[in-house]
Image (cartoon, rainbow, N blue to C red; front, side, top):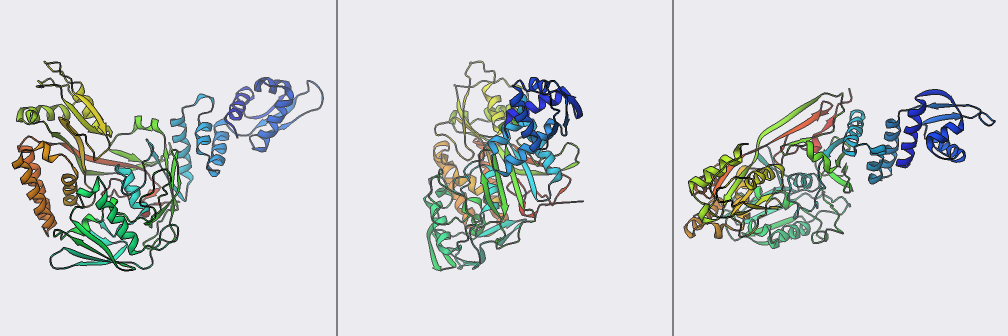
Length: 527
């Protein structure tokens, strides 16, 4: 089915309307702007699609009976259904935009309607192309959530406690420098190959070699197999809370043959509750993994549809599932899944007055006017809140006319030699481990701090790593945040909140620590 055929049908429908009409083939050809012969071909094709019926009367100028059965938009939806079944998602987008219609609006309406009749599939809209679903290369919040749906970690953080995932049991020696993880023997990857200790060893070794992640896992000395389903991790320094670290998305276990595959040939094969069935720039489809070694998902499919124009009506702190216009919905929210911060790197900016002025600017909507000692450069992370902060900073009114210049970076990254950095601290899993990861992964503390400040930071992080109590770890890290604030180095702008808007038929939605919800628990009320 082509976009042009829909446009021709709509033109005819506008001319004759719904129901039975007496009309000549010549008038139909005129509406189609084609020959009588081609008009007959088009009528036959449209009849085969059940859009209309045509009963001609023999003889030149004789009026036959034309009956248009469905509205043009319903004909479009039928054609889109067929395109989707054939996995022609580019064509589906084209069909939605027939006769100059807005694709973003039309696609949302189509999927909202599909959602209201679905019993097996939950739809969610998304505003940008999804990144590489490789645990070691996924930085964005949504991608890291999807990693947890497709892959498994050794242990998982649920609520306020750790539970086994690929590992059913783990223990350490009394010094907390030697950890042993016992794997479930029945776990398989999505290609039905078994999950073995070798996959765990190679997946975690890759983190210790990663230019980005190695700072967080720099205390790991040796990772080795003790048997087919047993892994031993030996540490350089004691870490009583290592399992909490190993519940993070980047520690997901990958088949060892896939770990170093380039993005162009990489296929996301995990052992988690969902299999990646389609991964295109238009749609990501997750299908239930019926061989999952945990509790199977209640829903059969999750489809995430992608259209960049949806970014215009999406707040950074909001995600939603597709809604039919007539369907009731409810909202689920959380008040704290992270923080936005500003980091004052240049020593000449590390004053109480400058810190306070910057916070007033970024916390409020009014344009601030204050003195900058020199033209500053800064980096900011790629989400709507940080872009808004950056825009405020680039539009300040300064007596010296020293306009700041900003550069956007991927979440978790920054640029060297930047006077300021604006970014986020994400709370994934337990708060102490999340704060610890932020401090360990930022690469330029030695350049931004005095030697005494840097020495104190390293001592605090060493104390945190060796601390048994999560409460004490959190207290030490909060104290470090306060010290950096008092030193005019780091300031929290605001907390990061999140809201999910959900159709009333989609049940059991609870926001998780990543900032989405556990897809395996979702189900559709058919009443």
